[in-house]
Every structure is written in C-alpha cells, then in structure tokens.
Image 1: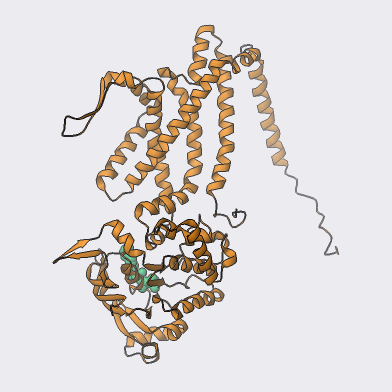
Image 2: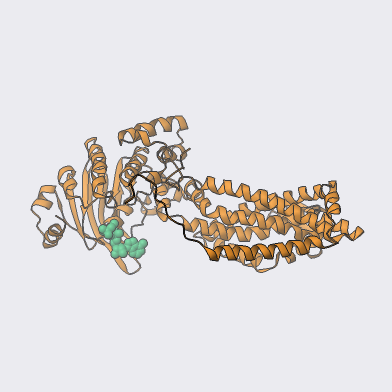
Length: 253
Length: 285
Ligand SMILES: Nc1ncnc2c1ncn2[C@@H]1O[C@H](COP(=O)(O)OP(=O)(O)OP(=O)(O)O)[C@@H](O)[C@H]1O
Ligand SMILES: [Mg+2]
C-alpha cells in the first residue's frame, strides 16, 4: 500500500534560516496523524510543503506516491507547471488557523466555488452537494450567511465543508481551533472527529492534547525542524522518551 | 427619585459655537451668491435658451461617450498593468512601471494634443508580423485618427496609468490568506485572481475609481483643444461666434454639475454592492 504522505529528509530554508532540517514522516491512508511541537518548530511549514504552498529545498516528499511539485522523466526531475501544481492540490484539503473563508461569498458560495470553477461541476449539482456538506457540519441553516455574520466556530466548520467539497483524499489542518474562543473549540473538534471516524486521512497540527490522545493513530513531536519522536498517542503523550518532548508536554498539559 | 421606567429628562448642552459658525458661513454664502447673481453678464434667459439646444445635447452625448469608453479601456488596461506590476516576470514589471511613470508624469493636456497630432510624428500606422513580410495593418495615421479616436486614446492611456495604481493598491489590500485558500482548493493563479482576489479588491478599488470617473467626465473638456466634439467644444464654438462667454460657460457648468451629481448617486449604489459580506448586518440578499 502506498503511503498517503511519505517524507524523507525534507528540508526547507528561507535565506539562511533552515526551518525544516530533514523531516522523515509517513502517514498511511486512513490514518490520523497529529503534529505537535513548540512555536517555530516548523509544523506549519511542513504542512504547507505537503500541498506545495512552499517548495521543498531538499529531500523527497510524496503524496499518494507522487512527488510533490515535480515529475520524474527518466533520470531527470521536471518542475510542474502552475496548472499541474493546481491540479495536484485538488485532492488535498486544507483548513487554516484563521479560516480564510472568502468574505464576498456566502457560506454556500464558499463551498460551491471550487467544485464549479475547478472541477467544472454544474451549479445545481454543486449546490446540492454544498447543502449536504453544510448539513454534515451542522450549518444547514447558515447557507446564505456571509462569513462576517458567523462565529469563529461556524466559520471554521464552513471552511471544513469547503475543503471536503473537493472530495479530497487527504486533509491538512493547521491549528484549526487556535483562533477560537474556548467554548467554540468543541464544535470544530466534533466535526473533525466524525471525519476521522469516516476514514479520512488527516494530518493535524494541534495543541489540543485531548483530541490527539483520543483520535490520533500517530502523534509526531517536532522541535527545531526535526521529528524528535513519534508513535501512538499512548507512547508519545503517555511515556515520552525524550527530554524535549517531556518539557513540551509539561508546559501544555 | 425618578421612576426607572420613565424616560430621563435633561436640559441638552447648548452648542453656541456651532450656531456662530453656521451663521458666519451662511452670511458668506449669501454675499457670494448675491454678487454672482447680480452680474449683468449672467443672462439667465440666454442660459435657458442654450441649455437644451441640439448641438449642446450632442456635446453632452459625446462627453458621456468619451467618459464611458475611456473609463472602460482605462480600467481594463489598468487591471492588466496592475497584474503585470505584481507578476514574477521582471520584464512585465518594468514595462508596466515605465508605462505608469510616463503617463502619470506628463500632463493630460500634452498627451491629448500629442495624440491629436500623432500623424506628424508617425505618418503611417503599420502592423507587421515580426521577422516576416506579412502586413496585418497599414493605414495613414490621419485616416485612423478621426472623430473621437485620438481623444479616446489619450484619455484611455492616461487613465490606465492611474487605474493601474488604484487596482494594484486594491489587490495588495486583500489578505494573502485568501490566495492561499484559493490555491489550496486547486485554483490556478489566474482563476484565484479573477474569482477571489479581484472581487475583494473591488471594495478598496470602487471608491477611488468612482472619483476617477467623475474626474474623467470633467477632464474630457480638455479635448476641446483638438476639436473633440464634446460639450466644452460645443459651447466654445457658440461663444466664439456670439461672444456670450459667461452664459455659455454656465450652460457647460450646469451640465457637468448635473452629470457629476447623477454619477455620485450611482457611485453610492456601486460601493454598497461591492461592500457585500463586509458588514455584519444587512449583507444578506
Ligand atoms: N515565509 C517565511 N520567510 C521566512 N521565515 C519564515 C517564513 N515562514 C516561516 N518562517 C520561519 O520558519 C519558522 C517555522 O515557522 P512555522 O510557521 O512552520 O512554525 P510553527 O511550528 O507552525 O509555529 P506556530 O506554532 O507558531 O504556528 C519560524 O521561525 C518562522 O519565523
Ligand atoms: Mg504554525
């Protein structure tokens, strides 16, 4: 079985700053992987490399067997054209910390936009599916609301529905609950929990230890641009082997 | 003790300063109006006689046409220039910057006269396919530059430079997270620009662009220097014959004022439309 995400020695530098210093990580299809680590450890950067919002400087990164950003022809690697990069991203959903909903479109419009414009679905079909997705995240009654009229938790649930509308095979979450008031965190985690139960492959950057312990198949702890340790939630959260992991967990738990 | 349910009664603060300022301003306005209206050269009857003459109305139509065409080309070219200036291609960036630099840096009046006399600089307009002998277009310049063509060209090119800056500011005002979200959904850069970034940039672009339309409407009067057939040219032609300069200038002023007022109302509705989704209340349709 091909891994959904397979990273080998992935490096990323900004000028002289080496943010990722050789990441090795594998996520199997259907797996939920939670990425933990202190601020600045490179979690977001790695996530953004997976759907090529950032270019990897060195190492190999594969999504569903395909090299991110390149095509191999014989011995040579060829950079993908912008349209090819865009096509690869269709299968990868991404949910942002700050939601990034399109403010000029209603909730329904946000969910419909990409299926209509990118996949070429008819408006009627896209609308029907968008309504079903909004219903799935518990927002059937907010279809006509603009993002500015929704609470943070509602906006994030629309953002999840928007990503799901592309029928992704992989979902990336970058601290999806960090910008939310504490009482709104639960509703978003509930949606993510249901998604995991449905068998979605998920890579989740989060500080929600309860979610990681309960939902994750693997927990990966990153620090300083490398994976310090990884394993089941029981191993990493319950019995950490490294001092850095222990120090981090002592702070967040 | 007042009952908690009864409205509070209080003596309001008296704003004596406001009253004094209002009185002073009204007095000045009265003086100004009476002085102007008392002028024997104003001739209200003459103004009334020329206001709806067919050649004046023709001038109004041409002024509107010049405004509409120049703004349409100006905005389209401005969007193109703005995207060029923000592109990763250094050649496009430099060419767009040079265009803006030139057309913002020279007076509109100079540009208008220049386009009016383009035939003197370039006698023939020829378009060939590079490196071949194939001629796509070949005409004497003066045969192309007829009617309102030089006026529209001058006004459009000038407007492109200003529109480019306005559009660029609008694009830069959109949160980069919007582009990322669009990319993450599999949109190409072009689609993301068209469907996600530009519609949001419109909220920032619309108010200054509304002012551009109003400025353009009045700037069209400059084309009278190349006999542009606009409203200003029409009244100038008349007062060159009958010397009723003041009444005819009033005719022009009344028309410009009326058209600008109509545009201002339109501007209000357009800005409200592009503000969609930005307000917490009243955004739903
Ligand atoms: N575009 C960029 N240019 C330069 N440096 C960057 C850029 N993006 C990120 N960095 C740097 O890379 C490092 C890792 O950033 P990253 O956002 O991946 O961390 P993170 O683990 O997600 O942290 P947080 O928990 O705060 O979100 C930081 O030091 C950051 O300043
Ligand atoms: Mg981050």
